[in-house]
Image 1 (cartoon, rainbow, N blue to C red):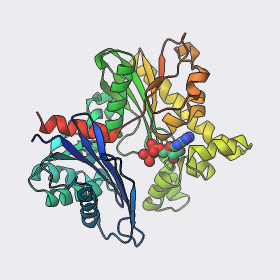
Image 2: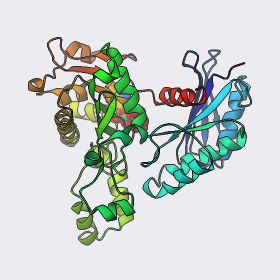
Image 3: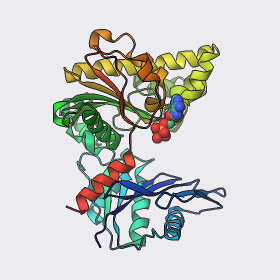
Length: 401
Ligand code: ADP
């Protein structure tokens, strides 16, 4: 029997998201989520899709990632999809930070694991959870290839002038301070799907991808290759996000330290967790913000306007970086669902060849679709992202080669 299944694991600090896919037809056999690991109120939501089974929810304390993955394995086994199956080809792990070293998906051995550990200082919130997920999965099936798919890999093609900050080179190099970019799996998938939607090869298209979820990033993709992206050393740089500030004058940090007496950790929390949309108006959900705007709420309006202004600046910047743009693609929670955001982001850019068709923009759907006006020179598209499918595809390509 050939092994064609991939288990995709996305391990966060207190959660594990998972999907089991069959790569013969890229179908999903099961999906699920373990939340609040380490608390009394942990929860597993498991949905077997293969036999059209019902979702199951289990509530009760799950102490750590090991217990969480064992519980996931038990749920899969109950559907006849256990980790001991000879049909399982590999586990694909989402790993947030791969630094400069990892430019493509990689089978994990001791050396690779040590390198992911070495990168913890630049991704203190993410890499430790990814490492735990890898170690636990390896413990459950030591014979199975564990593949790391890095959020940063797609951006390693950025030219040096886009990846380097204009600071002292020796200091930057000693501490690995440079722009790495994140959401790479999504930018790779969406830019390729956008080319497909245009009926062209990725090599022949230049795309600006706008990944607008709770975290948000833009990228400039030239002929299938990333040449710039808005996130930097960490996912804090760039667009206004749900709770992160995005771009600001770095001197804001000195000022808050000297004048407000805030500690570095307090400023870190302020900029990562209490800024962005939530800092501006108290809500980070775009649905709530647009609802409040409808009621004439001024704070929600201003937060929205700041969000859109930043987005527009990046569209303009990446237009200039690419020289010729074939498509602008919106993706992730906000990009796929918030027609008002898409409309506002593109408004006034007719001179750049961008214009929406209002009716197409209003249509909701799961499929990639064009929303630009017929006369527009640049295609505008909504392309739902699928990071799990991309991780599974990359992991499977590696182990079945
Ligand atoms: P994450 O970064 O957590 O993966 P998602 O890509 O799932 O985020 O995006 C989550 C965000 O998408 C929510 O915070 C909300 O702002 C936005 N969102 C989801 N559905 C809608 C909708 N129907 N209309 C507007 N915004 C939406």
